[in-house]
Image (cartoon, each protein chain N blue to C red):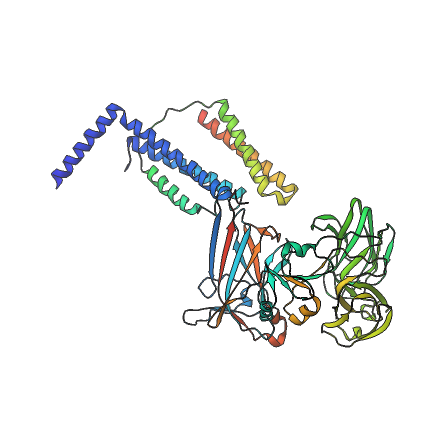
Length: 124
Length: 500
């Protein structure tokens, strides 16, 4: 059963993506600067809206998109995400001392490798 | 009905096809996409403005008699007591805590508490706000019947004149007054004195001391403090002695630890251990040398300055600590009539104290244990000899010789006490924001406020820990005086970017 079709389906999909990314970014900001978001905005309300948008997206027509070839830019972006992950985890585990470096390096490398794996998979 | 529905569907289909043909649908989609992209921007703008630009006031209402429990530990509060419109809980023991959410950038909180005056005579309640990472609270009086007397004193902007021989002043001028005693429950720092007679030479304090001590020292360049410590092992656990050097802003300059003697069980005195704290490049001035509380004795302090005083000394050269008894001498100068406080916790500390008051030899019979005894002072110079020690003496700057004596500040600042007899004898001015509680039938609503920056409060995970301190619960005979609490109202103020 598809509730939304055509342009409506595209819009619902776009709305879901925007809301999901917004939620994740705000969650990250809240993790880094505790209270920056939660003092003024209850993220659980946003999560409910994201879930509703997600459910509507599931029941929307899927528009076939042409597959884009994986470029060098995608790999650079994966490395960038790995670096961001490394810094966030380092910041949050700073109290652990030397162990903090180990955990954040492993996490950063894992992010990069998994991203590469996904990109390779798409390439095939 | 169906025909009408079909007609509407046909019309809609025609409109849709027309839109597609004209490209209106894709244009609408573009507008909708732009709108959705605006959502995160609007959220970010709102968060930035709320966090940094506009002023905010947050209000929290803790219904203590309601279903949710805000107070901890549970063992120190009663179950909910139902009483018509005012369900409440009782404080059943001292030190009951609660947390307050503090928004980023907040600078002030106001706390109002509704409670019943079920206190024993002369007792009250204070509210403390955590001001250090370790367990340490800055207390403000919330209610004390003794402070009804404040209304009889002349006052101006939170300054009360106790000594009527002096003039009423505002807070600014008060800071410039010299040789006065100010009692306060606020963060109040007197101005530093210009200290004369400083010589860089070794001073040895060989009087045995017990427990935590804070010394004010005058130093410049290299500072070397050699300490001999001896664990007495009265209690189980390890007994490290931390020695910290701070500047007068509370900034830690250097620290050192003398470790435990290796005996963590109860037992006899351990071996004497030594440690040295050495710092170079100190700017000439006054510093705070702090010794932590440990189940140990400080047997000797050797320091390369001739200026060292303390406001509170626990003398311990007594057989009870397994050290030979010897007379300790304290030197002090009193700028006004006043009192020293002395207390011992053992009969071994009962003694006849001889002293020289402005060159007149006198005696004072210190004859009670577990009770604060007042020792009257006149204006002048004192040398006091304690033959048996084992007593804590406070209420002035104490040195172990006349040469070591100096007054670090232009005025003496003492903690405000809920005892007006003591205040009248010892204090010239009171600086407090204490306000009389409002009475509503049996209930009182008292309030106090804390300045997060000025009082240097410790906010962790965006929460400030507050504590009710009801000292009468420490007296076993007064445990039945439980304190009913109805609610707590809290306002947190966050100034905007242009109000800071």
